[in-house]
Each structure stands twice: as C-alpha cells, then as structure tokens.
Length: 340
Length: 271
Image 1 (cartoon, chains in turn green, yellow):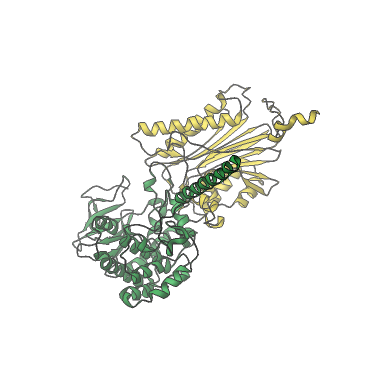
Image 2: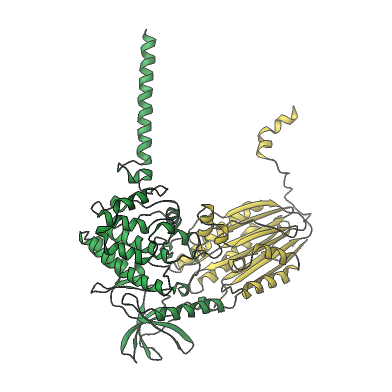
C-alpha cells in the first residue's frame, strides 16, 4: 500500500513516507482537524486477514489507546478511511535511542552514568505505568524509544508487534533485515510469551549498552547470540567500563539474570533501586550474582574473580611451551646418560 | 505404480501465490532415463513477485536438469538443484540484485529407493503403516537450529516469533548445499511434500491420518482446507504420492547395499 505526498485520507493529509525500504508502511501526516502532525501506521495486510489476528490487533489497539503517559507515544485512534485501516499516533520529534547511543559513542564521558539513569528511569516509569494497566511491551529495544531534543524519552510500539508482520526472512546477503535478538530475554527465546520481567531484562540490556558502549552478548549470528542469552551470564559492566559505580553495575546485572525469578520483580523495584542507588546493598547483590551458574562469553568462569587475559588461544600456546620445555629436559637427560 | 495428487493454493490472504509445485518426467523426456518419478515443491521469498519468479524457475530447472543430468539419481538431483540455484541467483543479480529466493523440497522415487533433497523449511514426509510419519527433510530454519542447540523445545518452535527465519535458501548465494537423504521404499508407503503454509497449522499426525484415508488429490484438498480453516495467512502447497507397487524398471541395476565394512573386508569371505 503506497500513498502519495499530499494524498488525503479523511481528515489526514499525507506529508511523506517515513522509514526505510520500498515497502514503507509508516507516514508522516497532518491531522487537519486537530491541526497537528501525526504518524500513520498501516499494518501489513497479510497479518490482519484472519479473524484471530484481527481480534488480537483491535484488542491491543484498545489497550494502546488507554495508555496516556508522558513517556509513551500517544496512540490516538484506529482510523478507517476508504477500506484502509491504520493507526494514528503522536508525532514525536527526535531521534531513536539507537541513533542517540551511536552519537554518544563518540563522547564517552562521566555523564554517561547520570544520563543512563535519567533515561532508564523515564523508560522504567513508562513501563511501570503500562504494567499497572496489564500491558507488557515485550519488544523493548533502542529502536523503539525516541529521544526528544529536550531529553524526554518516549516509548513506542506498545503491543503492536503483532501487526509489524512476520513474513519469511532468510539468512543471506540481506541478513541485516533480520531483527537481532540482542534484547530478547531467555524466556522469549525459549518460546515463552514473557511478562513484565521480560521488560526488566530488556531495559537492563539497554542500560548496560548505554554505559558500557557494548552489549554483553555478541556473536557472528543470531543463533550464537540467542545461545548466549540462554546459557551464559553477562560479563559485569566493569569489564567494558572500569569506572562504572559498583551500585549501578549491580542494579543492571540483577536485571539481566537468566531466570526471571532472580531479576527485579517489577519496574517499581528497579525504579526504587535506580532512584536510591547510593543506598543499594552492593555486597549482597554481588554475592547473589556470583552464585548464578554459567560461563561468561568474554572471560569464562574467571569473570568475577580475576581479570587476566586468559583465552583458549593463550592456554594452548602455554601448553605447547610447557611440552617443548619438558621434551628438552628429557632429551638432555637422555643425552647425558648416553655419554656416560 | 504410483498414485499422485498435487495442489498449490494461494490461500485467502496473500495477493499472489509464490509457491510452485511440479512433477516429472515431462512428456518430452525420453524413456530409459532410469530416474523414476520426481516431485518438487518450492516456496518463494522476495518482494514484488520476485518469490514467484524464483520458485517457478527453480521447479522448471530442477525437473529439466534431473532427467538430462548424471545417471545416478542422487547425483542428478544434487546437480539439478545446484544448477537451479545458480539460475535463480543469476536472475536476481541481473535484476539489480533484487531479493529473489526460494526454498525447495524434491523427492525422487526410483524403484525401491527414495531420494530426498531440500533447502529451507519446505518439508518431505513419509507415512508408513497408516500412523508412522517421519520427516525425511531437514529444516533449515533458526528455530530448527535452536532445537538442535537445546535452547528451544520442539513443541515451542511452532509458535515462536522467529519461526519464519530460514537459514538456507536458493538464490541467495552462487553455491548452496541441500540436505540429502536416501531411503528404502516399500509398497504402501505414502510421501508428502508441503510448504510451511501446511505444516505450521496442521500437525504431523493429522497429515498422516488424512493421506492414508483418502486418495491423493482429495487428501491434498482436505489438508489445504484444514490449514486455511485454522487461519493460515500463507500460500499452501502439498503433493501426496502413494507407492502401490514398486516399479520393476529400476534400470540402474543398483547393486545390493554393500556397507563400507563389506567393501573393506569383502575379501575375508572368500577364505
């Protein structure tokens, strides 16, 4: 479904397409009635064809319309014009958190901690409010958060992942089109629906990335990354960012626990920790974290104890050197005996 | 003696049918090829109808190349898929690198043997003794890999959010390796080839029950209608092949199965 600039759809006038690729389904438009800019989102037709998907979609839209919060992109209505159905959303002037983080990459500074907590709290408040209204996001990632010039963070795409389309995607030269599972919780990877603690995990991942400028799980492909989420434990933040304050590190690490039971059990708990992070019991959190079983992708089991550059490669080299030395010792002993 | 039925249905939602099915040999193929019957199903991927082109081309090329290629059916099938892959890749490169890919499941019945090759998540099954259904193909999908890696339970793969991501497809690279399997055929065996539009909403046991209770063409229709009634929003394609009697004409005079052990130590018997 393609629309021309200037085309009218009832009270909305299309300004231009947003987003990438030929199959755009998002447009910037003008609401002539309210005299404001809006964003129009057209669902993939194929997702709405059957009754069950459609009912789920309209249910999610109703819920979305109930969510009114300063840090949540407003869903105004589900509009129907000339056989077209589309979502009308608040236009938020800004850049995605993804782009924002990319810009900050160039200027690593001590502001990172303060700013990370500030942005984190805004997102956490938005999610806490949604959870109180029995809605979990389940697809939280930097691409779904917009940073306004005044520093306000707005969370987008609440519960409308179902309309984004689940068309077949292949690994191939176009692998970039495949969504990365970087913010996917272990329970989601394992096929579970997830709950509010899934959002805690995703937010923890974003905070980690904000401060460390690196994700804890990294791999050649999506499978490698998903495997790490499910079977390993994240290297502590200080592995990538030495000057991270210990309380902040422990708060983030608790959000990233594999088992949802071990994480902050709600956004409220996480908010409380972030707002009072000076008084967090660092020692208790650290002990709790170190009891989690599993290796770290970066350092193996020694991650929490020693920070030596021990890698498999180094160990093999060491082994070879030891064997050579032993051989030399044995040979010299044998040579010595022969002479006698 | 083989009974066969095959239907490819656009489904109620999609604007075009990007699946394609085919069978051989075509009428213009000379007898004496010793390659038996070949059945192919493809599920195309790509925007603006490119998937349609990919799947049609793949089916056409595989059917042609198989019968005119090498003598041994398994080698002929692999070569045919290789050639078809390169053809689809070539077309996509010439069309400004337009994304044009397809999956494939191909099944050849030659005498008492069946040869199955596949790329992607289009499947081939064998049903024996009415209820024993076995998948002869190997899914090249993220969720299949996740199950192998034991980070996903098989029963959770069907509804996983990443179930549509496949890890191998025809047309994405100039060279591709299909999964390949050779097995025995006994009279009464029924084979099923189908795209994910079918196997996602319809369980294996249900497929087995339907294909062993009605003739192939009716089975295809019943399966497709069932998939659609369960809300599939995809194209749905299926081929059902029942082997009533083995073809006497094997032609290849395939030697009796000699195991590697036998080949290495066959001399021992002569002592």
